[in-house]
Length: 172
Image (spheres, rainbow, N blue to C red):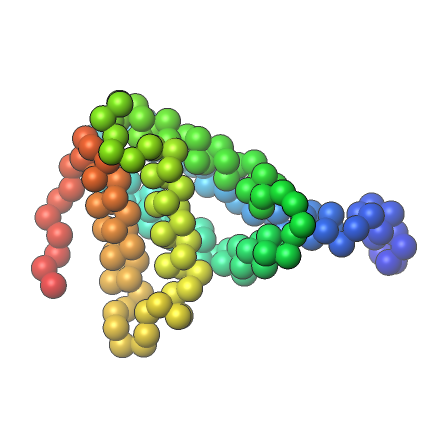
């Protein structure tokens, strides 16, 4: 494809970037969300389902951290619009998470579920994206870091009322 053909389909670099970064990332979030719709409705040990979900979220964000960092950089220099506007399935993910939390805790939430789901996501994203900066070599192995992130998010979710039954934690 020539440069002229490329710019015929994408009049600006921003539109080309959106197509190259946002569309695949949107597809990944959409696929991730559709896999977990069934899990959300499972009865039984909600804590195990939630932990598996958070661990898989860490893997998803880790696998696509370069795309996410590109999105962060692009948003930093964008003149208008929010990056999440471009990722429809991320907004659907937030909406679904808030609806699930609202269903679980009703109007007893200490923190608005719409905010809690975003803060939880941001905590996982930051820990994964900046892992090399935050966790120096020798502090913990990958599994311990992933477990610590999961427990942190679970504690946050449980602080919002109607705790998800949690098994005892492994001693330090």
